[in-house]
Amino acid sequence: MSEFPVGKIREDFPVLSREVYGKPLIYFDNGATTQKPVQVIEVINQFHREHNASIHRSVNFLSDTITASYEEARVTTQRFLNATKPSETIFTSGATASINLVAFSFGETYIHPGDEVILSTLEHHSNIVPWLMMCERKGASIKVIPISDQGELDLEAFAQLFNKRTRIVAVTHVSNVLGTINPVEEIVKISHSNGVPVLIDGAQAIQHGPVDVQKIDCDFYAFSGHKVYGPTGTGVLYGKEKWLETLPPWQGGGDMIDRVTFEKTTYNELPLKFEAGTTNFIGIIGLAAALEYLKSISIKEIESYEKHIVTYASNALQQIDGLKLFGPTGHKAPVFSFILNQIHPYDTGVIIDKLGIAVRTGTHCAMPLMDRLGVDGTVRASLCFYNTTEEIDRLVEALDVVNTMLS
Ligand code: PMP
Image (cartoon, rainbow, N blue to C red; front, side, top):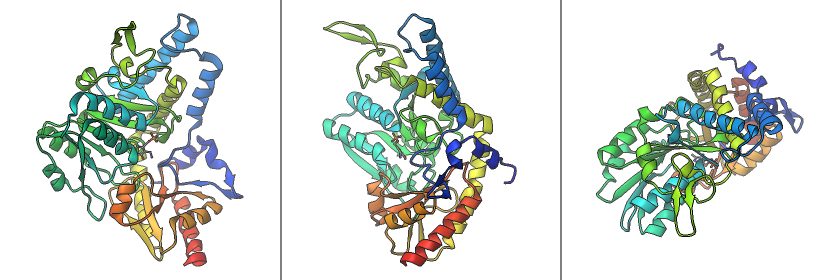
């Protein structure tokens, strides 16, 4: 793996060279948010300095320029996802907003009392709560795909969940807790053979490998900008045109309208129908810069380097005395949830933080999954392509210190 230029890549991320508590920062909280490369920081800076004006609305030079860049960002995003048209790419404030959009708009149109939605045990609260809110509003209910003890979806049980009342399936592409990579193409095939559309929550997948929405054949795909090296407050919803055309807007306001009177409003065309109000337009241009940055490294190369990281970290963590690692160990994203002996995850997290290592502890917004695993929480180290095997060695040393202090 020596050919992957991780050292050079790290130079693109200013924060990675800082220290915390007098120790070099090791950032293993990428599942929560990723760091930003200078290529993104500079685009945002430059647009604020030189090109700031409101998009779509004004007849002036700056507005024309930035509107063009915003729409170019849509084409960049469309190509990154291999969507068929730019208008199938809706900009939102994040994966949460994208999922809420579908839960609301799809629910309004297609869900009736007695209908059912299928989710999985692996879901983040962002892909549970919007559906639950919709089900409570519409008198519908949720069915749940069970998982194996290794944290993999039980597809046979999944196929048995369908019936005449099933209206939509919403599953995560990659588990934010276990790193499980779900077989999304198979999930879509099974769902479509039952005549049911699928939303994929790609918040933890888009940053780790190529995503081709045509190949997956999903009906909706959601992700957040800040987890893919872009700015916070940006996100994407991909939707097949045939669905987006039929769904009502989920928010009303400027830009999403065609004509407004006090009696009636007609809506704008796709994609603007779903982009009410002033979006985080400079952020979206920054998101496109992040996607271009990943393309310049090659998302395939990133995936292959991260496979090496998965193997190295899985082996290293399993050597640690009393460490229980949850989830699959082979084919997975570089996300490691564990508990060290009987030590509370919070205590482990606080001690290794003082040694310079940033992780997350707790339920990771996945309480139903914690219930299934039979734990109150875990320590989660979530890695990415700027992390190194030397950093993993430092984590192992730090966990040995925790063991010595608290076991
Ligand atoms: N889905 C998954 C799998 C996630 O990990 C997260 C964020 N942790 C979300 C959805 C929500 O993303 P955001 O908070 O950026 O909207």
